[in-house]
Image 1 (cartoon, rainbow, N blue to C red):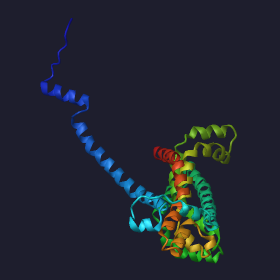
Image 2 (cartoon, rainbow, N blue to C red):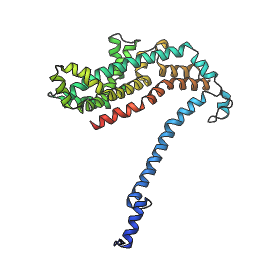
Image 3 (cartoon, rainbow, N blue to C red):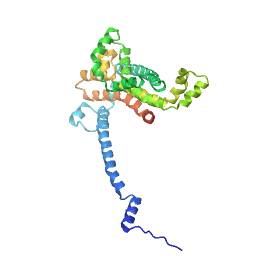
Image 4 (cartoon, rainbow, N blue to C red):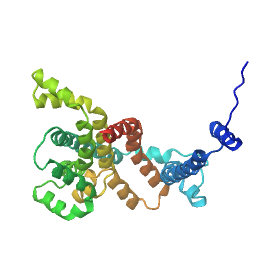
Length: 301
């Protein structure tokens, strides 16, 4: 029986065995600080985002006396009357319906118009295409507050104040840049051979867009739909510009109005705020995988 011996120096053999065992080595020493930093950042982000959310929801199960005695304590006992009183009012459900109507309108407009614009910018070659796409990209940096005054004057001139469309149209317009930025590379990554085969079979470009391109772009469409819906649901400034009648308010405006009317009833304010956050939060959590899938496809494209 022949025996094979390792002719490397002793120091090299020690380093090699340590690297294989995962206990030491330059790569291991370089990765550990990065992993610890990533975990630390994740913990900080979770603390900043989740802790206030939990404080609001749990605070709705307490009484004002409990909050005054211990502002950060747990309910003892748990009280469900605050949430019951909020959910049992017609005012809350009216606000919920207003928010849902505006969010659906804004999302539908943003996705439909964004998909058509992204199709033209991704599948057609024309002069100024990249400049037009850059213009939409710059739109990501344009804040709503900068357009508040001219937007209000325009809506008043065309008679869209106190009208849900007066909120849905601007929200869809401000959602178009991110919609096009996500959809264009996704549609552009779809092979041209598919379009050529569809043309050979007699399909026009419109039919290719409707029957082939849109179904293939479902992950990206779901992503932009979720982003537009959540942004519309949480919008505060645009509804504030358009609506002055409390019956037309959305949930963010209703929360602010409720806080003004019942400033001393902190427990009910927390309950009202918690209930107002739940629809968008549940919708976002349910569609999380679709958002990640759409963004991944966009980055690959």
